[in-house]
Length: 406
Image (tube, rainbow, N blue to C red):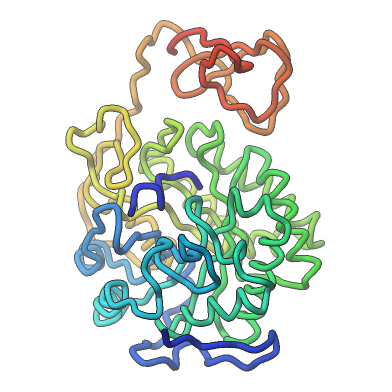
């Protein structure tokens, strides 16, 4: 999930001697709260609590009815080691800043899940020796904050590392066993056909370890997507991958499937409006999917100026909106009704040259040969030679020739 995550942001530990060690059950730590219904953890949008101009969680709760937040990200220390930190720099063991955010949320009847991994930084699965050691590091996070939910965000470059993914999936399985009732989501990259080769290898690793989380979620953005139709198509294709991997029927696969979107303008210039979110929400609820979330609440507000100069921001959406428009879709997925408000319509971005129609959208999973034409980032492109999964960028030595705006 490129989504300008950690790149825009800046000991009393519980040790498990082995995988079978009985851990402190989530929720029994000091300051813990009663668990919410799992549907709220499944609907929790991502929030960076210390970076990207963090919004006031209490204000979001008051404005939208949201009860759950997905706090991001827990990483390995920047200098190496197998102990959890916020963003690679702030040890969880001595944290007070994030704890204060959690206390505020819980004082209003809400709760949090915590996400580990993400696109930037070094992950604990890369630095810990084995699944048991990785689980011990994450258990510190669960115990410190009295968690009832945790998210494994497995993406590049970590998910290209077989040993790291074995550690992460093994740790997730151990935590699930040692913390009865813990809600576990696994989030990975999305492609037009569902997920890519490394995502499929991650699923096979989970199968080989006998591990089934509450859901496997994909992120259908930053890969040549063009609105909701391309996202729901990817979700349907991912359902097929889950069926073929685990031997599930369609309904069982959807019950273990999740969507993790990006509100507004993505890193690669895709746009996802409130209308797109409604379409995907209808698909998710209609197919009884387990999870619907997005990156991020830090971005769930309008930029100034409104289009942010055509750039992707970690602190605003780059589309016209009221504050917290996208959070209300999470509230709906959880089964609640957000307060009434008059939404600001999101205009479709006007291409720089409307007279030149756009070709079919580029897909990271498709194979193109010389002469094939695609559209990407409001430009048409022509393939110079055979290519697959090489993003059109106009470089002289690349496989794509820029044919101008569309």
